[in-house]
Image (cartoon, rainbow, N blue to C red; front, side, top):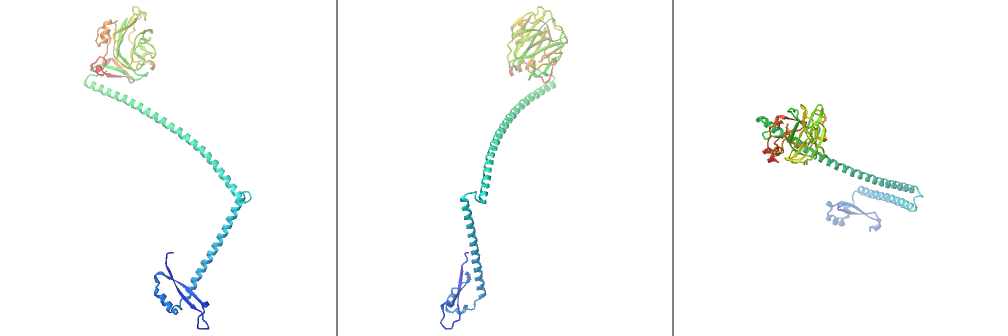
Length: 395
């Protein structure tokens, strides 16, 4: 404690026979005095007159002495206890140095050793589990990355579909505006078949007459390899009465009454191309034009046959039955425009004129008109055609 304590000293004299005091009979009694009550003057006064303190409270002094004695006894007991503890620990240490098998404490040590070894084994097993958890985390990370890639691909595909829908909506708005103004396609129109399906097609509403000869011309812009089937005319007796088609890995073909002639046409993707094919029953003679130029001719194709009337003329799909039986592998993917049919064989000069966007009305049996074609399954009519000012400027 930091409390400053002063002690006052009283001299007690035992009664003696003589007047001179005996030093062996003198006791000094120390009494604690709080620091604030210490007065140096009292020391001098005590030295001058010891009888002033002869009447001190002896009960208080005895109590203090007893407390000190009890404290000393408690400290002695604590010392003895500590000594016994030290002896016990020293003995156990000696027994441990002699070996673990001689005493029960040694058995406990062996038990502790076994438990430590088991813990080590468990730690190793835990490390194996940790490795397995790391492998699982790696696999999970790979799967998360794969899902992220799929999500991005799906988002891109969704954006693409949304763009197609937006274009379709814009086309409808344009069509509605044209109808409100009294005409749909003032600068002509084209048919669009954006994807390869077995349900997207167009139907020519004009009736087909009986034909002993014909010329069919059209503008075509293919979007994929192989033009598919631009024109398919079927009658109840024959689905391949008149067909113009090209497979993915085959040349273009003209079918008359299911008879085939291969056409030496070189059709590319992405650009408008003018195509004309003519045929007559006299000798089955046929001719094929591309870009106004004769590319090939032949004979013996369904000679003597005539094109039967009142069938179904489909654009964009090949009929395996009257008005149906479509196969997506034979579908046209791209655009068609200005499809025309004449009941005679046109001259090479007339074909060249058509390829330069000229017009030939004489002998036309299937004119290209707004109300002459109906579209189904997602095929659309879009404003503009290869020979219109709008289309040429947009190309």
